[in-house]
Image 1 (cartoon, rainbow, N blue to C red):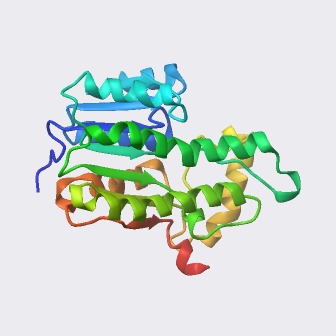
Image 2 (image 1 turned 180 degrees about the horizontal axis):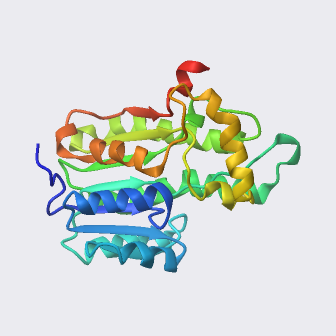
Image 3 (image 1 turned 45 degrees about the vertical axis):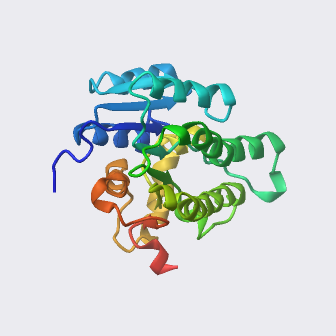
Length: 253
């Protein structure tokens, strides 16, 4: 197999300024992609990642809006107008205990995790290589193994699982593949975004690591090889699959 499977390819990664999205963008660039367009709401974070590799370019956009999705499509058109890989990584986690549920939080989770992928896919679908295009969703084990106080997040990721299988069936006649990676606990900024201090985050991980059969919490770099692998041409017969990367938590529960 080529060590540059994405040579001359154009890739879009949403939520590319931090965490899994950042690591995925760097991996696609390292594996030969000629253009890696990363999106997000924080311009400075995108600029930091773009500075790490000349193939990476940032587009500041809120892809839960028509204007944001169209801005990403315009960035694709500024190249040759062809998109080879779309990675839906942007997402938010919020604690949502049922007794304290509020509508703004519900809207934030559902708009980001559900509406965003739908809207951006609609705008970019005309540009996806057909045949040969690939969509990779970054989901969560919560989509099929939900926990307490995270019902909205888990429901949003169950929707992502459904998109993966439904879109795979719908787009297969066009030669476009759709797959998902469902991580367990990963060291990202998501916990700090929920107001947890670093000490609280480490306490959380210390409490859950005993439930991970392989004995450790994942880093973003543990997840990204599965994203690139599902996107590359060598996986041409893989579609509609959801790969869980959780250190074995599913088999322990």
